[in-house]
Length: 216
Image (tube, rainbow, N blue to C red; front, side, top):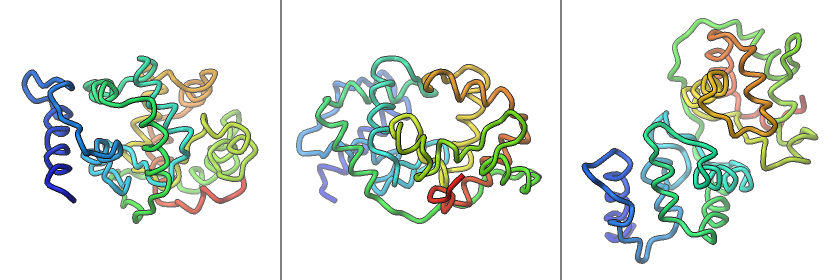
């Protein structure tokens, strides 16, 4: 990696970590590929450098583009607002290139970070079949489910994601901190999940990346 890229990533981290009075327009992007701007947090291989940052590797390109546009439009916010700041650095033409780069990456799958007791039989049912009036996760999030084929932008890949990140997003949907889901579907589903369900599902989905290719 060139010294220019390393310099750019270091400056990016200053902004993302809340450096004093850091402003997006202070950073020089000359000679830097747009996905390298993202690499400081998400890793150039899309593995996510910390569990609070989502793994982008293998994610649907359309979903990545939608989330970036939602951050830009204020429809989605992350803790601290770093993504909104980063969007001031990106042109519309960058978004597709970023999405295609990360969609093509295949790093190793993450390990567990959540320590919780969970009924994994129930978690498997929630993920693959659904329980009572809670639909199966894979009814939308499997690569071969009708929902994933017909609406690839709104149904992201979640199998193999960081467990902490999955749990955080489910909790945010449940508590109304994240509201950019299609038709409020995830908010309605998450409100039916207990804390134990959220922790258990996050653990189960994180450690079963093959579920992405499984039929619901």
